[in-house]
Image 1 (cartoon, rainbow, N blue to C red):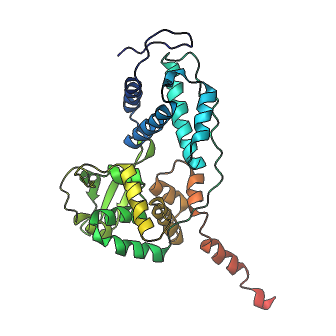
Image 2: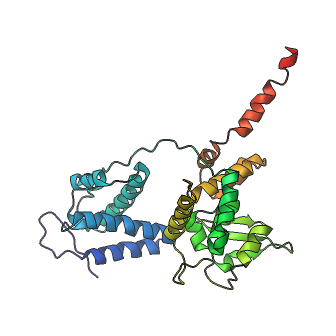
Amino acid sequence: MNLQLVTADSDSTLPSREELLEKHLRMLKRRNASPHTIESRKGALTRLAEWLGDTHLLLVTLTILEDWQDSLNVSASAIGTYTVHVRSFYKWAEQQGLVTVDPARHMVVPKIGRRMSRPITEPDLKDALLASRYDQTLHCILLLAAYCGLRAAEVAACTVEDFRRGDSTGGAFLTVHGKGSKDRVVRVPVPIMAELDVLNRRTGPMFMNGVGKPITADQVSHWASRFFQGLGMTYTLHKLRHRFANRLADLGTDVRDIQASLGHESLSTTTLYLAANSRRAADSIDKLADDMDGA
């Protein structure tokens, strides 16, 4: 497949959208990008291409890209994600000589304010786990998020072979395939492993969708969100991961161990997960006033 240099005055035959995306996604695979990253990149570029209509991806200007940004009726965080994917695509296109100037270089990425962690409450988690008993696969997905801290993409990537039985107790150690193709190992408590064993998976993907294929990260995320909505709750699966971090902190776990368990590169990211939990700080502050009676 030969993709030719495109300039504003070029009469060259442009590659089809499918050819262009295929070439770009193959590059991501060579870089060993995660399946979730590849799927997200494909989704963002497909969304842009559909909005452009008859305008080719390689013949856009910054103004056109900014108009596309303005048309997005999603959260600032989602717009930021789409923008990063689009900027990466056009940077690659310039490196490949497909465009003479990167039109996305000066696209503005929305500034996202510092968001407080809002983990699922313990009573709500108890109710959700009870309600999910009708579907063992969903039940196990919730357990891995709440008690092992897995993201949706990490749940989708789980295979039977990733679980290593640690001892005779029935628990296990799970190799988690995290963001940026960075693996980590987390403990799977005995009761959680017992629930996973009910799935009776012998080899291959741990979680399958309704048509017998490995579940995707988006399917995991949407499934959990719809489930919570059905219960009248506003949580996402990620809020169970936040709960995992906060419960570890409540038990006195060192913040750097929590960072490792979550797979965060930056300690500051981990502290954001713990920001909403004021119980620990409140207990310490209360102790400052223990001697007030004698004042």
